[in-house]
Every structure is written in C-alpha cells, then in structure tokens.
Image (cartoon, rainbow, N blue to C red):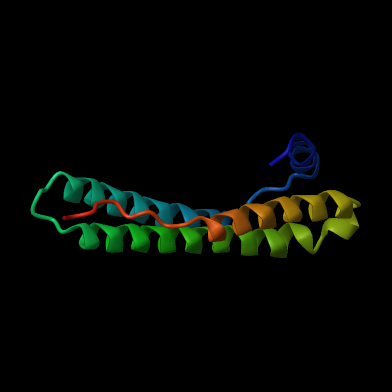
Length: 117
C-alpha cells in the first residue's frame, strides 16, 4: 500500500474486520504447517518431485483463499464506504494497484522444481 493509503487508513481507522483477520490468521497458521511439511519433504531423497509440486500447488491455493478473504473484507468494509469518507479516488487507485498485482501473479509462469534424466 502506498503512503497516501497508509495515511487514509490511519486517519479513517480502516483496518481488517476482526472476524476476517482471525479467519485469515487461522488459515495462515495451517499454511505454515503445510510449508513446514514441504520443507521436510525436500529433505527426503525418496520423495518424488511431482508430490512436492502438488503440495506447493495446494499451499498456493490456500494462500489465494486467504487473499480472497482479505480482499472481500476490504471491498465490503472499505470500498463501499469510500464515498461517505470522501476518498473514492484514492480507493480506486488502490484497487487498480491490487488488480495489477493480481494480473502479474496470474501471468507468472510456473517453474519445475526438479528435472530427472
């Protein structure tokens, strides 16, 4: 988030809804456990590369769900009330920035972790 939006968030008391925050926190703790499991897989030479890739894909999906949850909360609690606060232009600029990041993420090619010959 840029400095303007940080200032707006501070002045207007914009923050993540507590229930969304707790839900995101629980999901991230679960993801952390999953990532630790992947790290253990990488230490085991008997683990097949495709199995690791599947687990990484599962973590990416879980992270996407956390992002969706945070975005939905932001849209519901902040974007729809921007007109009342008088910061519509800043909110639109912020959303455009988020959309650009989302498009960059979507367009990134996936790279294989290992190649066997």
